[in-house]
Length: 410
Image 1 (cartoon, one colour):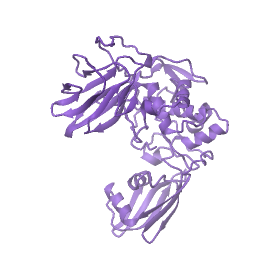
Image 2 (cartoon, helix red, strand yellow):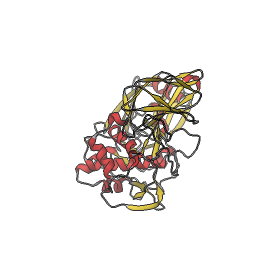
Image 3 (cartoon, helix red, strand yellow):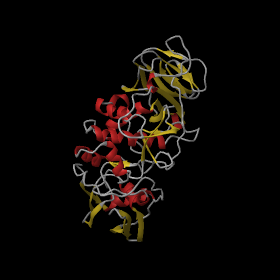
Image 4 (cartoon, helix red, strand yellow):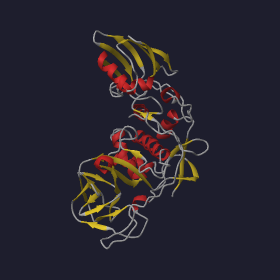
């Protein structure tokens, strides 16, 4: 999981997006309230009530950008309506959503702008290209004949689809609950504040991987339910930017050594012996010099034939803060995380580098952990849960300056 592309803002906007708000005879209602948004019983554990802050009823996830036609159906009655307003058109059985020269065609109707497709009954679900999804689908036309697909879904139901993709649904409940709080906080801290932005987050590793209803599991859903509404805040009640990663390799990092930001609220570097079960705790990478040079150049680092790579500066956690690249045309310093992103985060799994050697064909790297190392170490949370720690203790370990809070219901 990589979060280097995350926004840094800690502003919460209380967005209320009604999934279906108009009347048609086939079961739709003017009623704005839906069972998707009903509160469950209070979560267990000690939390601080923060009535001045409200969580959003719904969130918006960009799940797809495509030029291809999309197959739609629903488990019950459903309909479409232009975002600009107007008549609601009931849909029957399976239909197709596709981009046309005039706009977007859904079923037999063509819309010049965006269109929302939603079930009549909130307990029903949409099916997009064979994958079940909660909530409503909003289709927007993009240049070059593309479609932008954004799912509008309840905050807690969004988390149902996140946890099984971020951690193992078979992990201990306390580890799942810690991830639920972190993922909920992340979403709240990253709600879009620009009214022209069509979505809050994407559904990939630039944010949180989201699989929708298709990937939900009972154990991870229980973790979401048992922590319903809980987020991490600072002392002033603002949601933290809760970075997290797969495994820290023995010690976590602070944000300024990854993204060159001074924002360290809620973070500190800690020793963490709990993530050693990670199968990629130790890793190696062999990469040829031409491929490495090409990747650096593609990322904007104009280097010629690379002769040597050294770690010029090390962060307090022991990570490569700055790399020194010596080439036939001179020397170039590159920030550690930028170097890793250029090489490829799936290849150079972390900047916790233990060895760099020149080989006949290129370079050999060895290191520990996977990810940027900031915030929650997911494999560490697993180890701590197995050791008997509660989710509150896990969160306190990785975010020692944070407050576990429950904002008021919207």
